[in-house]
Length: 109
Image (cartoon, rainbow, N blue to C red; front, top):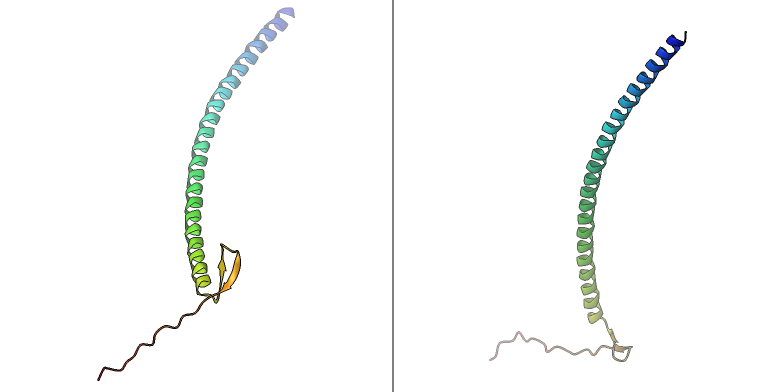
């Protein structure tokens, strides 16, 4: 009986060794595949970030141009207003209205 128990013990050890070696090979292949997939995902994420950054910069430039347009319009309306802000004295002053000379449509006689 000792012979059979020793034989089965050795065979069990060999089977466990083979199983561990197979699992180790699977783990190694899985690790390499995981690393490759992680690198591919990172490249994809980098492309998405670059695209999102370009969209954000485009939106900023468009909104800045629109803001500058409204600043110019605001200044134009302030210039047309009856009261004008004077930065030197930090007060509002009345705008001086000048009459424009009338254009005459009469022809000289």
